[in-house]
Length: 172
Length: 404
Image (cartoon, rainbow over all chains, first blue to last red; front, side, top):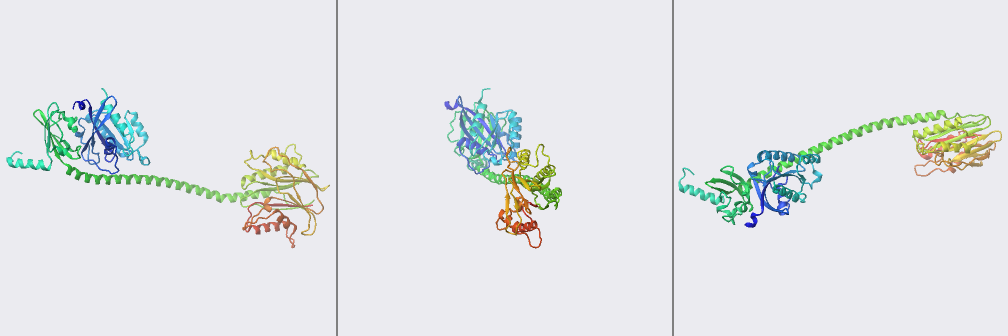
């Protein structure tokens, strides 16, 4: 118990539209696995992953929140106590970027400015990319951390969570 | 459970406990776990120890306490063991009670319904995306089709205009050719341009009172470009207008033309030329040749037995190599001789079976003029057309006959 008390613990929420790959990203990060089968998330699913940042160790408590769609809106109570969040959009579906941008606005209005990264997931499906890279550059110029990622190949996944872990534990 | 008898309330509690896998945690103000009970194993919480930090043992509690409100509900939370629970939070005195009720069955049912709805939505999105791409592709194809139709229409217009213009160009060339003549010597010719118009042209004229020039040229290629060059050269020879050149000397004429019409500066065109100068008083014929078929000098005699001289001279086609030299040759023309100038189109004809007429065949035809007074020039042309097996020849047909 003494040892664990010295480890930082931070709650991170996965947010985005439905079927953008939030659960797959968590599985890739936590268990290094990927499944082609799509299984929608209902409510929220909680996982834990320890990240070694060199000078400190962080337990990330990952809240994989059900994707937002036309019917279901994000339940803000799930976000209570979050230190940061991962916004996820599907690079092959432009509408999911709009959903991510909308979520980010509502989260900031509710919880204030929290560290976050925006992942453009499914980067492995290059032939189907449907979001203009100019839009990504535009978001980066506003100071956002925008990263390509692929739960299938693992591209960008570890780096994104490590970056967020560092930011949510950085000395104020 | 106000109003319910104790026994009914206990029975309801028992049902909830058994069917909903009721479990609870109790946390004090210092966020330590001070109480736990019920079916904790169902949620992967069987090993919790009282007295420790609550959020170390139940990670889902991290950040949630103290409570923002009471009661507080987090529905359908999937915990480490894979079970889904509704988490009910209650503030009671100085501690928080967290009651876990299993909703895995409801979660699974909701997931099945939601899954179908999402899959349907994804299919619709894909269909819409494909439709947009198909529409874009279709629009691009239509635009390409319109461009092709426009190009085709333009090509048709050009195709319709081209033969007319080529015929006009051929008519112009014919108009600047000299007329046949009979005195002081008989000259006759045939000029039948090909459908694509070649670069043949010829002429004859007095250079001075004693010297008569005769020439035939063939510009490489077909079409208006070669024709324009042949017209320009013909005008120049007719006017004898090369500065400081003695047009009585064939080698000087060919050399001067070669310096003036280099293919590097003249649209990659070159031409062959046979040029001769006849001196009637001495019957002397000086001549030069720039890569052209030799002229054919046929002496008088019985058909088929006439003596034939091929009037050749060294020299490359005009325009190929700057500084090229051209030989001047001389022949004394016997009485009652015939001299033929022609281009390669007068004998290089390929038949439908691939057979090719040779220069010797040409000589043979010219040695055997028709018995019914028909011109040997017409007989030659008819022979070529028959051999070709078509109404028109592939190249210009040009031949000039001088009778000295």
